[in-house]
Image (cartoon, rainbow, N blue to C red; front, side, top):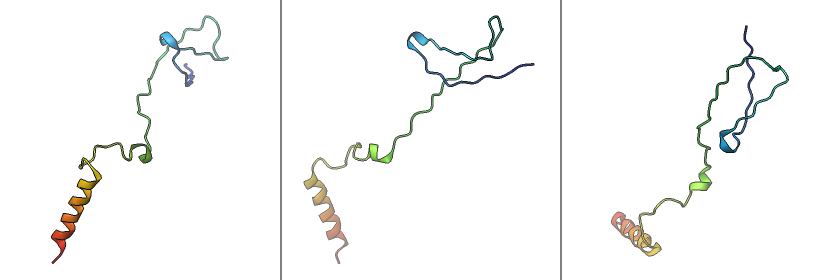
Length: 75
């Protein structure tokens, strides 16, 4: 019969993982399986607003474009 023990641990420098449990006794034979959590941390939308490259080099270029678009809609 087997018993599963699960803990979240942080890898220490040199790739060292420390796992301790009162259920384990000296001399026990155990299997160790390491599952890395590779999921990226989710960014909030606020953190990415304004980070993308814009379509216009200057604010004046943007204003000129918007003015031309408005003029195109005028009848």
